[in-house]
Amino acid sequence: MQETERIKVDVNALKSGMYVAELDRPWLGTPFLFQGFPITTDEEIVQLQQCCEYVFVDATQSVGWEPDMRLLRRMDEYLVLEQPDADASQSQPPRFTTQRVNVQSEPKHGWKQDTGTFLATLQRTRETYGRTHEYVNQVLDDVRLGRAIDPAGAKEVVNTLVDAIITNESALVWLTMLKHRDEYTSQHSINVCIMSLLFGRALGLEKYELQELGHGALLHDIGKMKVPLEILNKTTPLTDAELAELKLHAGYGYEMLCDSRDIGAQALDVIRSHHERVDGSGYPRGLKGDEIGRFAMIVSVVDVYDAITSDRVYHMGISPHEAINLMYGWTPHGFLRELIESFIKCLGIYPIGSIVELETGEVGVVMTMNLAQRLRPIITLVLDCDKRPYPVRKLLNLAQFAGDDGAVNIQRILQSNAYGIDVRSLVLEGATEEIRAVV
Image (cartoon, rainbow, N blue to C red):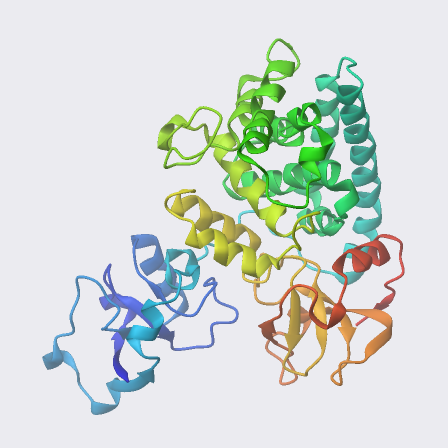
């Protein structure tokens, strides 16, 4: 077994390169997403100084720093803990949980979680989602039938979505779980738009920038309507010729809209460049790194995330947590690592739609992000401690019990479809007031 040196260090003595393995207080209630992270910025040191008096630093994972044993005052400040075998861990794919994504600044735009308010907002947001769905279906039909499309109408739809994201982002993101393989193209377009707005807001984009980003995201796959349905719906691997035809959709979409005065340059770039990759392996132009526009990079991340978490005719979707781990493993070749880390921060450790098991043994689905306490979202309880379905769904606000002796914590994230739970049906219940018991 590999031994790990954990040394008690006063927060005023912290330096860049130290690996913070443990705090002098529980991780819950601090601005740190994950347990264990390397210090990479002065801001992280300031955050630690604001939260703690001392921390335990792991010398074996620290970079450019070694402890001066002469400074250790007491033997109990030198802790030796058993860790998993190093060779075994090196064989695993890279994970985000030991990177600088672990530190989260205080939210610039939070909202106080209240279960009743959330359900009321969800009903209003459902109407917004429904109108967006109607617009997207109309646009897709227009393209299929060779009619002129109305990109100006997309602006109005996106402006409404931007306002909804600013009002209560969780309610709108919860509706992105409404995924049905038979309506993949339309729902995917809406979901990518909503998640891109969420991500853009987390990155600090201004409202007018969000509107431009959302415009491109909503129409990003419009060119697929020019691709034969037998290719889009094929359940077996595509031939080289079929794959080449599918890759033309980005160019098709750009050509349809490039002469329109109702769509901006950055939105157009999203449509053309959302399949480009930082190492040049993407399409249609094989752009690399900074050659890819910022908005296109944002949408490319969200596009992949929604695609791999959705059921398709040729594969079953994976859980949000599995998806972000998988995407992190694709850095830095497919995506910029910093961008994926920011996306993970945006989603939180328990992304909306995740199936989780509580310490009580109960099982539920995450319905909201709690920007103030990211480990304590609102969840819909689905199964009791004996894994029997609740006859009436219950909402549980984990933040409500923070600091109490009877606090309820999430124990682990489960695989998608665990215990046969259909997240989509839960979304429909929540959007039609069938979840009523609020605890």
